[in-house]
Amino acid sequence: MTEAIDLAPDVKRADCPSRGVLEHVTSRWGVLVLIALLERSYRFSELRREVGGVSEKMLAQTLQTLERDGFVDRDAKPVIPPRVDYSLTSLGCEAAEQVGVLACWTERRTPRVLAAREDYDQARRDS
Image (cartoon, rainbow, N blue to C red; front, side):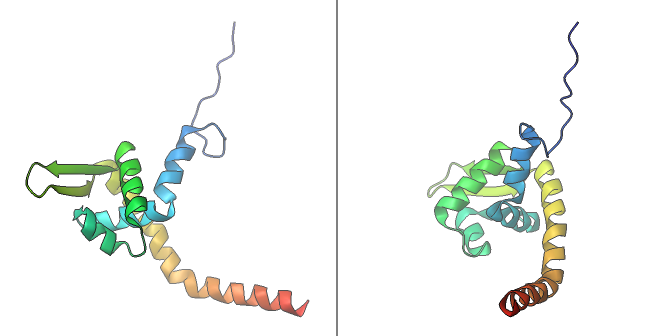
């Protein structure tokens, strides 16, 4: 008789599939795209302007990854010129709300983090 293998999700385990999902949701551009799309749907060029600093290539890759994971819906309209709108799925809304909380916390606590960095750097210079 073989023992059952514990396949319960555990993001700390190297082979856990949730680790890849976490990586996509919390990537630099993934977080920002999810937060932007929580506001409304965007066309590609609008979203690129909304998410400052993202290259066209990185935005395309991020959107494709989030679409594959079921977080983003890509709606291509058969018109000339082509129109493609990106929006969140219900799963994407859940993820965006979660990373949005982290982003808000980060914005509120950045002054404290910057002060801690300065203290750390000063202590290093003094030693």
